[in-house]
Image (cartoon, rainbow, N blue to C red; front, side):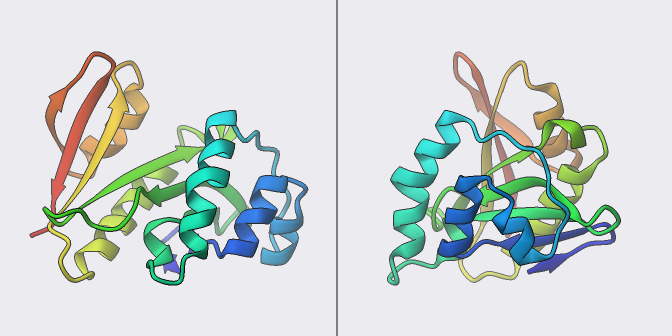
Length: 168
């Protein structure tokens, strides 16, 4: 678990991920949080069922690099978004980061603060040399989060900008 001035960032266990998918407020009850209204996209649900849950269940893997980390507002005592890595470090010592803020919580700086905390966490992990990310070209708020945290654009494809933050 990570803590910042306004946030608690907690990695979810396998059982907590199952509750997250159910979206029946059982996760909030377990974490003693106020219930939130959230919609899990079909893409996220598929990723959870096809990749995230199997990887978190695999005892040979470090689940912290595969699970969702829920972002909790200390003041509001509720979940405001999620952040994750897309697997363990690659051969170049890079981890890929992904994130999303719940629609009604956007524009409050939560994700900028959460990404900063994750950068600080990765800097303490052996072998990690950088964090990479991709954002849709038209998602200005998402890449603004990266820019505020020192990510540099490294390239682009048809729809995406690609980013990197050097750790070492």
